[in-house]
Amino acid sequence: MNSYETVFILTPVLSDEQAKEAVQKFEGEITSKGGKIKHSESWGLRKLAYPIQKKSTGFYFLVEFEAEGNVVADYELMMKRDERVLRFLTVKMDADHLAYADKRRAKAGATA
Image 1 (spheres, rainbow, N blue to C red):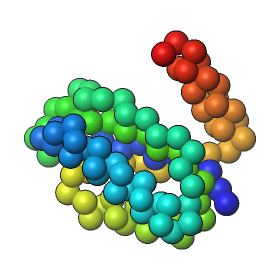
Image 2: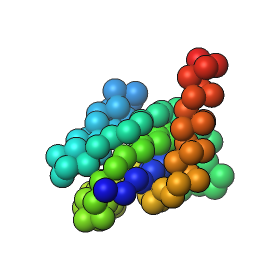
Image 3: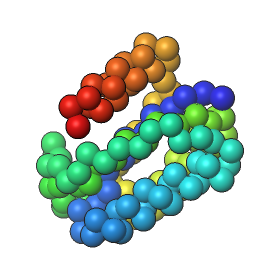
Image 4: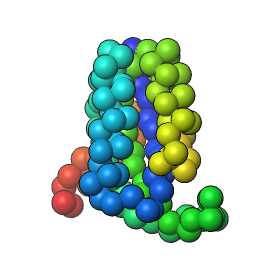
């Protein structure tokens, strides 16, 4: 299994509960296909660098997971079809990226 990281932006017209439901749906897609969620994080409502679909803000989320390549393809297809998602990016994590992510989580956990 490979490690992946997805950052996605949800439309700001959603309530907090609707945004959390969308995240649970995406995480459920990964786990139902045999993947494993390693870490999930909400970055909250943030201003976009440029307007997307006439919106200037969006809910940012980060999900780190382990899965096979075919799971990622299905996951991205589901995100493309979901109208709540403004943008998303999935990246395969290498050893350096994994070390950085662990260090960042440890630092965030120490300050929280």
